[in-house]
Amino acid sequence: MWKLTRPDNKHDKLVRDTLLDLEDHHLVRIETVREDQRQVWVLTKRGHGEAKRLLEPKGIRVSALREEKYDPVTGKLLGASYDDHAAAVTSTAAELHRAGIGHRLGFATEIGHRLADGYVQRADLVVRAPEAGVPVLLLEIDRRTEDAHDLVAKLRRYWEWGRLLPKDAAKHTVDLVRSRPDAIEHVDHEKRLWRRVYPPTGREGLAPVAVVFADTTEAKVANTVAVLEEAGRRYWAPRRYDTLYPKAVTARDYRQAVPVVVTTIEQLTEHGANAAVWRRLGRTGEQTLTDALDNPDGHALYLAQEARAEAADQQRRAAQREAQRPVCTRCGQKFTDQCWEEPTAPRTTWSPGDLSLCGTCHAG
Image (cartoon, rainbow, N blue to C red):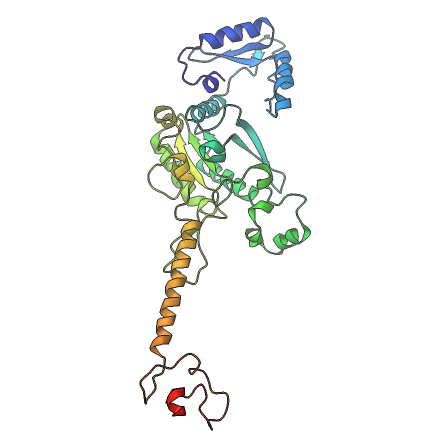
């Protein structure tokens, strides 16, 4: 919490004095001491109750109580090993907040996403920062404690969750989705479950996912990203638009994809989360977070390219028709559209469709 609330403070004396005061009132306790000699403080049962009373009415969720349990033989405090993964999650939130991405109360950890089979995919961190151009971002913090294919499985589950309908979905929508596997793709996102949980992203696709690597090597990060790009392509990659002008329309359809960006905690710490330290799967080079999440080759480009291609096609067809327009053999004038029609009656008199003489010359 010190990293999150006072990210630019190099000395924690003020925080320590506050903790000592809270300890005097039996609201916090020291759980363990890390290798760098920093103490890890947690709420006592009394402090946890006070926190819930103060925060939950404001819609702020309080984490579960870490109870004091002692070994009955040795008397040693059990479960006192602080999770380095939790520290990396907090550090990530602190770096995002320091860069102006997310209010300190706009972060939530261990947020569950229940799938159709009952499995709950928990996001390590969720940030909502609409003022920074990131209405929602689901983060996975990887300290190389899991295989790269485990990350692919998580990505698949986020993709599947984004394709679920809410329990109160209209019957005709439910019947449509049950009719064939890809029918959900024809259901607007506003009618899906994920939009009941998170706000619109302002971009095509499902809720974006960020993978932040911590305490690992560049080689391992590169290998993991390569696996994500290859094995997880179905879930993050855009598709080609179904268009009558495939050569003219190069835009990509991101509407059914999970946008995925990657970075490292070291890059966030050194350069800041608002710097060009994020890489979008399927792209080369690093960008700012909002640039990485944007789709410059997406739907807006598709609409522009489709409109240009349709206009060009109409011009081509008009020119082709004009080139085929008959010319009067007597006066040399091109036929009008009225003259240039199929005859509907015997040629006792001039009628539309007579391709030798125009109406004026025929009458003369």
